[in-house]
Amino acid sequence: MKKRKLKDLPPGFENESNNLAIDFDGVIHGFDRGWHDGTCYGSPISGSIEAVKELSKKFKIIIFTAKAKPNRPLVNKKTGKQLVEEWLKQYGLFEYITEITSEKPRAVLYIDDKGYRFSSWKDTLKYLQKIDE
Image 1 (tube, helix red, strand yellow):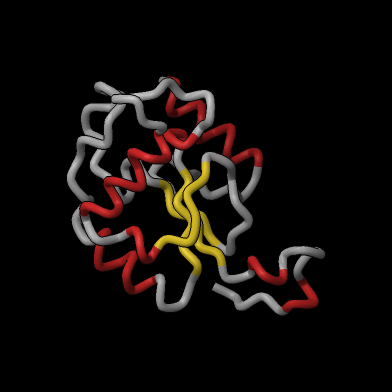
Image 2 (cartoon, rainbow, N blue to C red):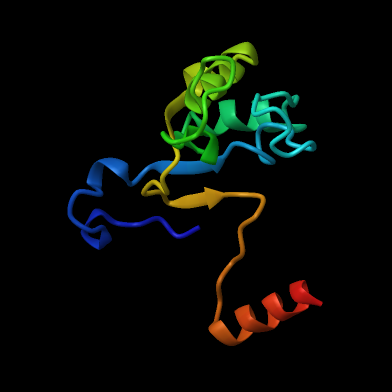
């Protein structure tokens, strides 16, 4: 990954140029039952704990998850963000996390199990056509 120079960053991004955005469900938290009951029921994905700890030495780690949406229904009288925080604490990861958000944060890279690396619209449309088949 090419290192960005501060002069290449938009105004206001200077303090966020070291952000690494990591999706929660399916990347850190095992999410094999989908929504299920709304809790964070899964175990850590293999290697995720060590990776987050290692990456936090170089990056500000931002967890992004739909669970943190403010309009998400409470589960056991807790917000989704509270549930994610509890899960991160349970597995000793909370201290390595800078922020938990439901919004796409500014970041040098996004790690997401449902991501697609864009190269061109032609390739994207071809890829999506294969998904529909």
